Image (tube, rainbow, N blue to C red; front, side):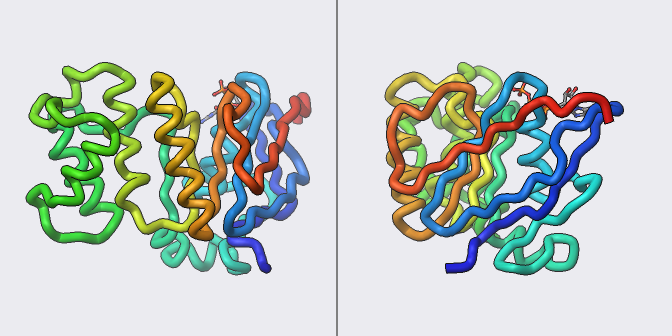
Length: 215
Ligand SMILES: Nc1ncnc2c1ncn2[C@@H]1O[C@H](COP(=O)(O)OP(=O)(O)OP(=O)(O)O)[C@@H](O)[C@H]1O
């Protein structure tokens, strides 16, 4: 089966330091790739490039065999990118945030909360907190709001930067289960995590970034 996402000969240079060079890999449906490496090794930079948010100095990323540079729109339809900070609007309530995420991710024009939004809040154990502004919630609760996207988005490709940050054990378990479901449904996941994964997805690989030195 052809990969969903693949990278060819990626090079990234930041502040005259080569983070990675000639990096090639592929991720197929059903696969999870964990990018590992020391602080500053370039994991977030790589995820940003894979998500089309930044350009590599050399090389190219392909989605379903098509270069992102020419097929960005099709890719964005199928991409869910979660950055390392919980992307929630501080002034909106948990419920409003989840409704907004649904509109953005699903192209859904219904601004009022739906049954699905309530279900997602329930999945993430946020019921009872739905009316509070996100700014008044803890880091882990805000992360749970951001993660609600994984329960509503139809995206095939998930790119997740440190998704386990701030989660308690129960939150980590929930995320494991949701990732397993996504992989079983033929989606793929690229994530970073400083900790080894505490479960073994069926098709799981790691990619280690190592310091390359001055460019
Ligand atoms: N916009 C930028 N301009 C210049 N240098 C940058 C920029 N973004 C990142 N860097 C540098 O690139 C290097 C890699 O950063 P990156 O955030 O990708 O690392 P990381 O592996 O994700 O680190 P961590 O494990 O700490 O999250 C760092 O040395 C950082 O200072």
